[in-house]
Image 1 (cartoon, rainbow, N blue to C red):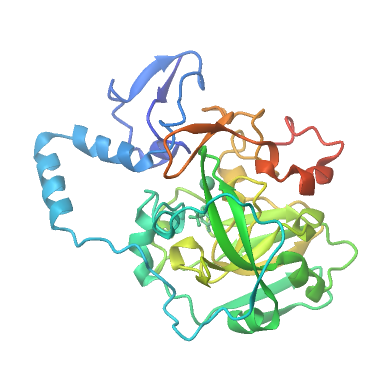
Image 2 (image 1 turned 60 degrees about the vertical axis):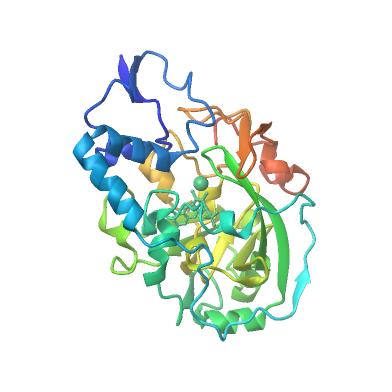
Length: 349
Ligand SMILES: Nc1nc2c(c(=O)[nH]1)N[C@H]1C(S)=C(S)[C@@H](COP(=O)(O)O)O[C@H]1N2
Ligand SMILES: [Mo]
């Protein structure tokens, strides 16, 4: 018999933070059958859950919380990069864009997963004002013939930027459509000249607990690390995004440079990268270390492989009410399915 949170604790974060410690009957139900009755709308509303938890904590504190909320300055959604000098010139329309209608800029810049800046879905957009994204360098090392450290603006100037309007699917079963501006990852890899024994590519987020308050907590092992097989990284769909909606990437979306791999769950698309390393062994990645039974190395979007605590059969587009079937490889199978020939994606999720 186990106890399970019925609300939106998509990553078991409640256990790690002891938010749900008291196991109130309203939030927990005894069950022998984990994963049976969580609905898509239960797992998309982290913020609501946390607020509800506050509510239960007692009337006095609730009143205080309401007063604080009312007094708090209104949050302004359009937080952009500090550096007004940075312009994304000469952006060409890339191939591979979806013709679906992008989400609103205000949605894509406020409904955020960026645990370094907070675990609530609106936390990052608030915390981002203290996040400095210039100067910024990207280190390239490991099994390459041309290692080095490059200034991010030099990198941007050196490469042809492309707009890619991609579907974005979070493992929590919500989705968006976002017009990114980025550099094909393959271009950067070719410049680095990987050695013949380089098989994987590993990305690391900035570690700076002063600017990233989430890194003072133990919810994840910091810094955040993600990785791809080198041939996945060379796929033309993979980009390093430096902008969105035609402008410089806002801090909360992973400025100044983040990965976008649209056929995989969003947690693979690591933000605010400072280092790219080429390795011969499969690197350990943050979420698969935190919860190996829940987050695999490949993490390809797949309606047939449920998360242990919820179904992946459907998704909800942010801003829309209805739910839609999840598409294998998030709809990008034509371009990426061949990468997984002969691999049992149920076993190697
Ligand atoms: N460094 C870092 N990268 C991260 C995350 C994070 O918490 N830290 N969250 C991931 C998750 S779960 C998702 S869904 C996407 C969200 O990107 P967006 O907020 O720009 O939509 O970023 C991913 N990259
Ligand atoms: Mo996510």
